[in-house]
Image (tube, rainbow, N blue to C red; front, top):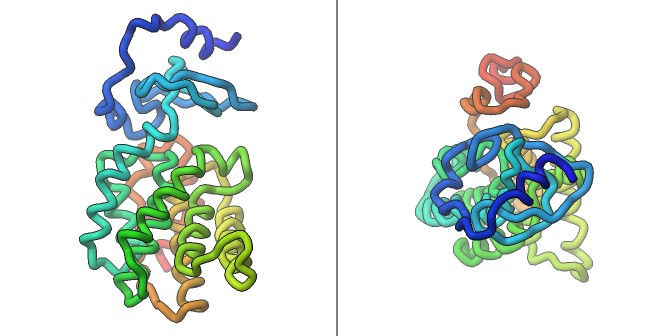
Length: 260
């Protein structure tokens, strides 16, 4: 039994789960205590420290706290969907920065898998794309919420790239047997993954989200003729990111990309 499992085993079941507002107590590391996360070589069942439900986990913090994906992302989704519905911002990167600045959004986490397709759908609508935004956002949330945290390292498919694919599949009405639409979202995902891999790891949900959005905007213009303006982004989250690439990241203040 690992130290993390021993700590969970030693917890008394009469204690209630931590209250939901504690989710936003720490923006990076463990949501509950801020300690670094320990990633496992394979998944194992652990009990969520917030909702109390048991789920398959690929990490926990040094103190043994595990927070399931549903608890990790649910608070932020409730806040950013109304923001997007009311927004007339045309730049999807600017929209992304507005959403991730919400206090309910953490430094890393599966909420970013949902944010990427939602900001792209909103920018598409705001730049003249013909979609029913509220319906499209609901579907994006439903699909992207199924992409678990850690897929970048464990599946080889970053959730930001998957989110871009979800965005495009919703626009095109793609499904597993749609002959014409089927390959197009996959081409976009492959394009995003190539871009992410070229920049390198380790993971950063802010960096990968911005890169996927940038590729998706270019892909949208080429395929559908809807142009999305893209402003420059200078990241302000690097002090909270233990794994920041610093000057090797295209969004780090003062990096070569920022100077261009």
